[in-house]
Length: 171
Image: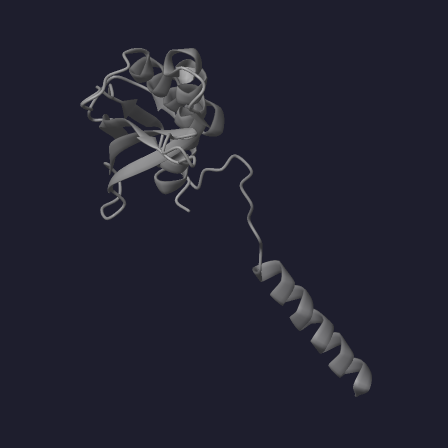
């Protein structure tokens, strides 16, 4: 009798363990590639009061590269793609941060803001229309022209991570 119960318990445990599976995706994306195959990424024009022309190309390249590296989606120039990402760079601003005792700023903050409209053409309710912002501080002893490229690269990396996680990463 005990032997039969032990076998029954073992069978129940084995069946239960087989029914419960844990699924991890290490590419950072939660897409079902049986459904989603293409994405269209539009230009992100600069609509900010201050304009740094290389920023648009830097941001768009980083966004496209992230999607290409982290997903199996094929990028196409067609608004009828499975997924669509479009937007604009709405902010590029400088602001003083740490003020010294002689009332001069010792740190300056460069902030970049991007508005993204993500459309899922396959599944309703998955669209995102959101504004993302990131910043980096630099010493006021440095000229913006000397650090601008590096700051824009770093901020763009951070923005692309935020955008990817909010749209394709579905975090």
